[in-house]
Length: 339
Image 1 (cartoon, rainbow, N blue to C red):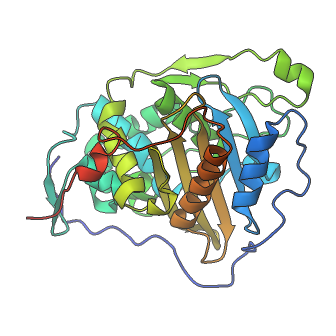
Image 2: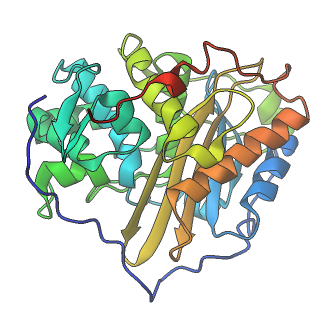
């Protein structure tokens, strides 16, 4: 990657008036028949009074285990903010446009991909996006599920949106660092995180609404992504986000990989966190989206997800006590500070 000094336009993060409340009953109108009730309880308790949505998925099957605030989860989506950097990183690696171990100087700091993901560095991903160009960025985004329904025959689900050209505000650099003009749904992010967690299978997400559908559940593959060799190159940064970066509020007793996002979309402040755990018999993908005023930020969303993992671990949901080993802490030992 070639270092650049181009200054990005600032994301729109401004003061009130906000068009969405920060606090609300996020369970209002939800149908819980067919959900995994222990997971539902953990998600509702962790979200508490905040206005937002929580989607929890089994990454090995694509089954949605709970969907809190179904109105938001099934909507046409919101700006992904910095969660878009995960798909951009995969695109850059697939195109061999970036060496994940190369430490480049950007904005007075030398960093590699692990540091850039963990600390959500905008200039790194804007530079990578400009190197790739809009067409390649868009190709991989669509491959990973942007702009289409993530679910299979889920009543009320709307697809997200992906722009047909580079955004007028900041071009491809803003697209790849802040998700400018993209509308991402919680289900789209959950499907992509599931594919990363399971090694590259993009499942149709399915949402059983009664016990008979649970009993008859069969996974449905949408497509296989050729990212198996790329996942080990982005995981250290996603684990690093939790261990020492923007998602540190999600730290738990076992390894969690994730990516935060914070920005403002149409005077609604957004806080995202997409994540998965990597221990025990039941791996989970947890996506949290907060909407409202300034408290709705990615680090808070990460804290809510961490609380969900914590609550389920306390109930031994994962089938083994989550514990940290030297191997699982490898990401926290990576230091990419400027020298």
